[in-house]
Image 1 (cartoon, rainbow, N blue to C red):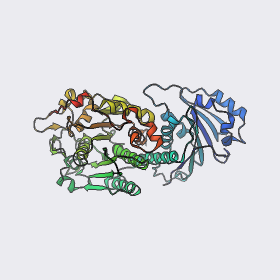
Image 2: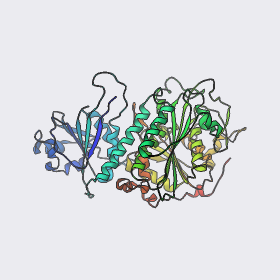
Image 3: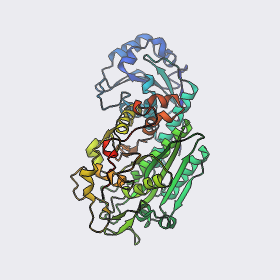
Image 4: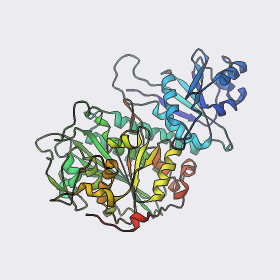
Amino acid sequence: MGSPRIQFRGSLTTSDPRKCPVMIIGQLGHLAGLSFSDVASKLQPRVDEESWTLSVNSLQPSPTDYCSLYLNLATVAALPLKCSRHNTPSRTHSLTKIIKTHSTGAEECIVLVCERADLFASVCGVARAYPTYSRKTATGSSSDHAVTVEVLLVGKEDTPVMDEDIKALNDAVYGVRLAARIVDSPANEMHTDAFIEEVQKVAQVLGIKPLIIRGEELAAKGFGGIYGVGKAALHPPALVVLSHTPPGGSENIAWVGKGIVYDTGGLSIKTKTSMPGMKRDCGGAAAILGAFYVAVQAGFTQNLHAVFCLAENAVGPNATKPDDIHTLYSGRTVEINNTDAEGRLVLSDGVAYAAKDLHCTTILDMATLTGAQGTATGKFHGAVITNSQEWEEAAVTAGQASGDLIHPLPYSPELHFAEFASAVADMKNSVADRTNATSSCAGLFIAAHLGFDFPGNWIHVDMAYPVHSGERATGYGVALLPALFGHYSQSRILRNLAPKSTENGECENDCNASKKMRLS
């Protein structure tokens, strides 16, 4: 099973389009500002200055456009002109689509023409265009060639791309493609044991010994959420933790990922049309793994814990039944009224562990949590709900900078949490009214197991729809988190992407959180 190797260069090299096809891609204004001498090394002797100038002048992106310069072996492509305030200035989604459409499937070169501020997002967009998972057996269906990405920076920032930048970009590409491969893999291959192996591989590269709590040990230690969801599966559920604890680290941060390797819905079983694609329900945990790799490789300066909540929501004699009551790691009891609302159960155990055992004061969880997320924020934007206005604003800014777009949901526990009222337990796991901000409610269920008086920062990311585009995973989240927490990075690229509201390493809770309101 081969896949293209992506390699970066900070400047343009000389190559013949006949031997190495090339695409030059960027915003029209940036392309028009180039002189032929800037790109001649990639085009000569097949393309002359007149052909280049005529082609660029003929581009009319609406929203995109391209022009073949030489036998479809040399192409210039323009990204959309317009970029609204809720889009990413890098136009990453269009960049990925164009590259996918025009890739030759062989040795090729992509020249990124962009400003430095858009470089990281653009590179992650290139990574999404070259997925690595395939089980095709036909001749020629397995790709094992090199894709060279060369950078041509434009704009006011003319600082050259340094070796440390190239390393950060290579790590980001690896993280995005790793997450996408895990999500694309079917559950007969990417079961919980296989996911643990993926975590162990990353741990070995980073020199970290993982903590693994699996199977009956989960029940014995009180992880009623993870155990209850996964106990009917052939491969047992698990909580896996990677901890990066550099010298001098004083902040404790946790990234908690939902890793449901397959979601049948349990006994509240999904239909024959809604179940296909549920291999993607581990997208949050996959993104956490890729993002953790990127962040640690970039020199994360504080204590960072990646918590993976792994289970298969399977049907069997030992499956959780509606009306069952589970005690979660928080100590709170949950009456199960919908076994298909399982992600919040495993994540609740994960965030409670992060607070109680890891003593984390900033806890972010990421999950393909609700179908309602697509209705609320769409296919391109994840949804964020948090007890901190500063972190909410920072997430939106980081989403635009990284290309992993995100948009806020309402945070109002006093208005929404009553949807989980139970006569016999502390709460039910699914809302009474499915028309009342269900994505927000699902996030609040997780927050309830920290307590609404949690003195730290809690950030929840629902990315059920951005996790994939068509039939392929996107690796969503891998770019977002290193950018959001870039103020803790030693990498110049990630530090420059960090939102200003977090540059001091602190975000104070908003007034709703500071009221220390505990809801039952």
